[in-house]
Image (tube, rainbow, N blue to C red; front, side, top):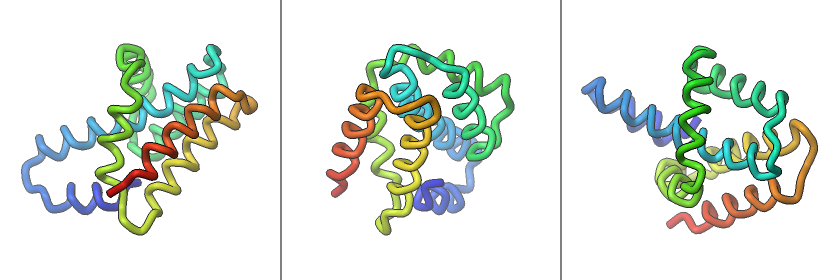
Length: 133
């Protein structure tokens, strides 16, 4: 995920910086997905299962760490715009990262049925990301 970030991380020699950057990326993606999950004022088992599956497959996180991360995301509830602004700096120029992120967001919306409020979050993310330099 996020080719330019992967390339950037590969070129950094100090592990603490790599770990910090990866943690920030996990938080940013997590905040985006969390906002989709809570948009319809319901947190379903399907959404939580998909969140866990995505963090296991994309970031190789253990379930305990994923649950802790999810709980921490509640404190960042009002920061969607900030997190999208940060993450868009790491998207590749070829559009693949953008498409991958939007597919993940779309999958989260569809997992328990589409709700207009979830789609509004999708539209907000799409609009912010389309303003890439």
